[in-house]
Length: 312
Ligand code: CP
Ligand code: NVA
Image (cartoon, rainbow, N blue to C red):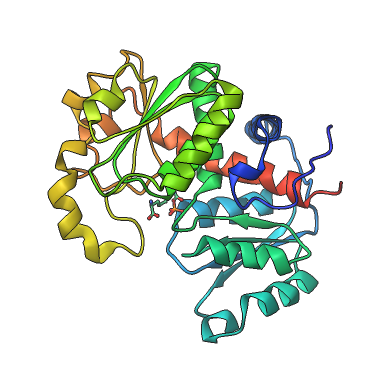
């Protein structure tokens, strides 16, 4: 096995194409072992602290089950229950937790807080979602696409909806592996310019194209993969009414989906707001792979932990 040179997973922008493929091949191997009932206690006796300042079903359960299957132990740390929630600094928290744990996964608001935690941690830090990025999700998405299509490079992914954390990490992840990405968002809800710039720069090395538009039909044209996410993310619930007014035309329904390739697959990070960003006939339809995608969170998270927390 090749040594893995990354210390953390803060953003996929830090990862090379090779490192992304190393995560995926480790995940495929772990998935095979789990299905064949082959024990794989690669993190025997190791502990992962999981700090959450936002809700979670998939991330929480898959990391907790994942570390257990690897022979380790996971601690769920609700940010409002630990002293962090009462004002203990991130840097002190990082230095203390580094004395107890072998890794930290954190889901929070500011990307900067994850960077701060990593800066003061002597142990690996994994970004479990911020307002800006969701790298773990995109690794599971790439695994799912690879599984269904047999390749990544040369495919086209269309993301229809809010230019949010998932859109940002897709921009980075797709362009790193040579997938074309096209994003359609309402005016004012486009992905951040700095991330688009980063993605275009990545594309120069891998041949991936990046297109940002307000036209969902244009974006979805000839897509191999169609992706959407909620119109209002965690922390934006109060904006829902105003967002619902402009996001209507960005609903992924039969009509819009018909403009993608005939064999296009549908992805959604979940949780879905059915009847808003996606209709039941699409998310429950034959081209939807959302539950395989959710399952792959487990295999990918185990791979990340093995590569970052395993004995080097
Ligand atoms: N997709 C995802 O991260 O789901 P959770 O919010 O349930 O963790
Ligand atoms: N964009 C969504 C993703 C949830 C997994 C959010 O941040 O709430």
